Length: 160
Ligand SMILES: CCCCCCCCCCCCCC(=O)SCCNC(=O)CCNC(=O)[C@H](O)C(C)(C)COP(=O)(O)OP(=O)(O)OC[C@H]1O[C@@H](n2cnc3c(N)ncnc32)[C@H](O)[C@@H]1OP(=O)(O)O
Image (cartoon, rainbow, N blue to C red):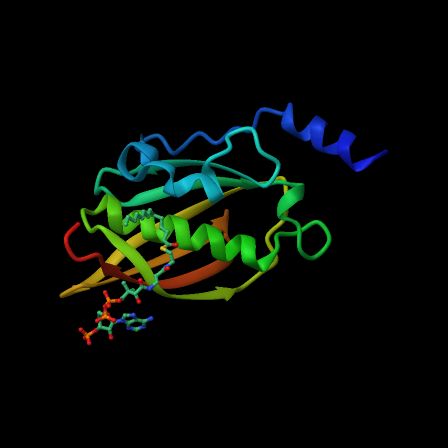
């Protein structure tokens, strides 16, 4: 079957990205606009599909699905795709907490290969704030299995 046919079939599939019972949908584009389109801007795409939420403590969570266009090792996500999710989700977590930032340093540990076409969860926490330096930690997992962990140093943008 030609690749294009496979991609079209994938595009037509509705993916269930619903959140946990106590999560509230988070309108990320309303906060940061087009800055998110590289990773989560295409809700019908074959690379990433995503939906952001906040829990009762205002921590940012996301459900992500990675499709065939995010492939690295056969059937699994490219490391750059995983890093891009961390960059967006952890940077966004800082914005959602009220800090207008860019990412200065991102350290990603790839713990297990992340399967394509499965919904995974991204969790994040702002763990420290020291002057302009906002440290955010995050994890991508499904059930008991952790696929990646990251530490993200965000730096506030002067004047923002
Ligand atoms: C404008 C609107 C943007 C909208 C974005 C929406 C995003 C939405 C969400 C999506 C998210 C997507 C997110 C993305 O993809 S953002 C895109 C990827 N990130 C970038 O392109 C950032 C490029 N870098 C810079 O612009 C500058 O270097 C920044 C602004 C980060 C700092 O340059 P600036 O001249 O302003 O400050 P400073 O150099 O005095 O540093 C200040 C302090 O920070 C410390 N430090 C700095 N860097 C590092 C480092 N690497 N490791 C350790 N420490 C570091 C530094 O030692 C100092 O500490 P101290 O000496 O005071 O103790």
